[in-house]
Length: 337
Image 1 (cartoon, rainbow, N blue to C red):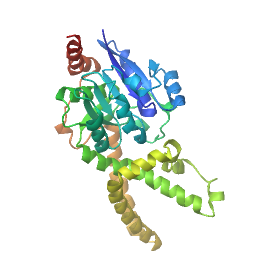
Image 2: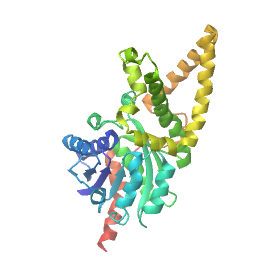
Image 3: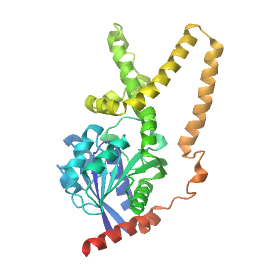
Image 4: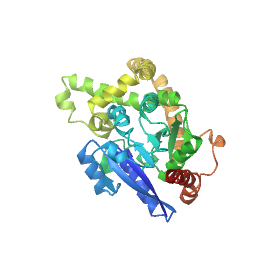
């Protein structure tokens, strides 16, 4: 039985759930098992991940955590990620595969080009989580779970010089977590992420900011239920500095999506002001119909372009016995020469 060494840098809900999913895989009787080392800049998160048994051990320094590992996963907050590359560059073994879950691929790829040593492979990844957690956006280590990625999608955006085998390893890694791989262009991903992830964070922040400036906030804050909590949760689980860095880095794409949203809000504002029932019903019915279609596709992880994808993803045993195991085995032999 071969042991694959993995380091997870960043032990929020995503990173810790990855560790739990790898530990779940260890129980399948596969020919490969994972030994997981964790690192987080927050000692509380690190201790929580260890208490959940998502990691085998914890390192206090990212460079030590990454030293000599087969796979290094970067799941740190955006504001920490550039420094992570600088810290780990001298610790990476030849042929190490770096899987970066940073929200802005173009930044991550630029950092990889600047800092990663020759022979290291970089693939940007972005997990789309299990649909059962679609309405639970809070990023807390304690909410991590082994099935967090089941029936989800693992987006893959490799560096241009990344070897094909390393890309396949990244896809297999996603399958082991329970997700279905899907490839995107890095710039395309960043535009979509700005619209689907970053803009909602901005809208929630803006709404909260205007609410606290309203004289009625003293009473309004008592009238807060899940609708308000879900809208504003980024202020709960994201440090203001990190939110600032993401918004400024992705500002061009965010502004374009924001302009479209403002146009839609103005139209709806006029419909409501005029009490135009017919227009309001038309908007709500169209939105409801399209939402039903989306939630059905998202829940079943079945999409319009599925005919272009592999009809059958390999099982856990097939994965680690195929490209995943072969790539690592060849690399270990090279190390012994």
